[in-house]
Length: 404
Image (cartoon, rainbow, N blue to C red; front, side, top):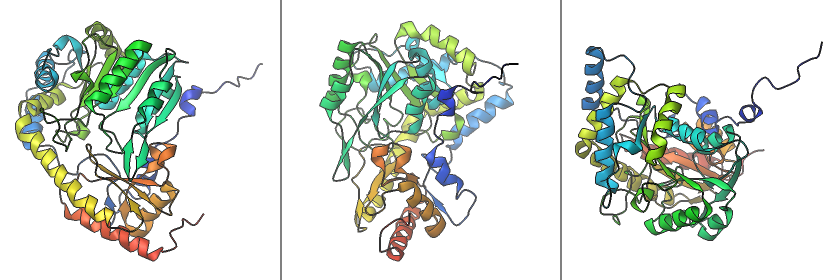
């Protein structure tokens, strides 16, 4: 009898690294004394009006399947919403939209739709690890183009990016505003990237879930620059959005895709074979969230800006900390001098200071020695207390060196 020595799972899956964020969080979850800032979500609950819409839907018995691409009325609402933000010269029609079971599901669907095993994929890093992991799950050959920190502000080397993207590159993955750095592409940079990718035949997968969490005043529509502002409807561009951040709906798992219309029916098939559809009561909640955007999102953004502007000066005043204000997103990404292993540092901060942060290595090797602090806190005083805990911990470890 011949012994089967083949791996019991796909090697690409077995080779995936576990989340370093979860690794740190698991060391402190359940401890009431820990101030947790490790996950990318606000600690504020979803607005009442949104929760009530889901309750009403369930009470009305809407517990059945829906269309693979989403409720028609929700797709229309997303079309209206996106067209108001990015449709100055063209409407973003329903025929370009699919509702998904969260932003991460939308990203995975895009990867499944466009990446074959062996394809070359370029990613701008540091970045949320799920984005690069999904390409690896599909068997892609991943090439990373790192941002570079200048006085705490991360910047893109455009020449290096364009050099990395060739006719052999199937897809570019870019997240702007960026998790974890807050780096944000300008509209001119997006136009330059898109023009280059047109010339090479490369797809652009743009994760723009943080576009409304933007704190600059250089855009008329009040959100970060989007590839949709410079693209044509048939460009090789897929844009991912989520209800999670702008509407305080992280746990609901609801998102959407914007794509060329020719892709949409095929995306419906992929959704069928992944999740079938997003739950109806969740979609009803999303519909109400969109209908009340003017009441929900500006308040969320204003509060997050207050959180950012509270935390950043406090961190900048801590000796050995290198940090710059994030243009977008909900994170302070800072370097702690003398602590090169951020996983070790983050675990020590949990154990010794009761402070929960995400390690930079979770996002890219070039982010070793950096830590991500999610400043989306309903109670701003938690941020102040967190900085005090960091300062006290540093004072007790004046040598600054991790003991390993």
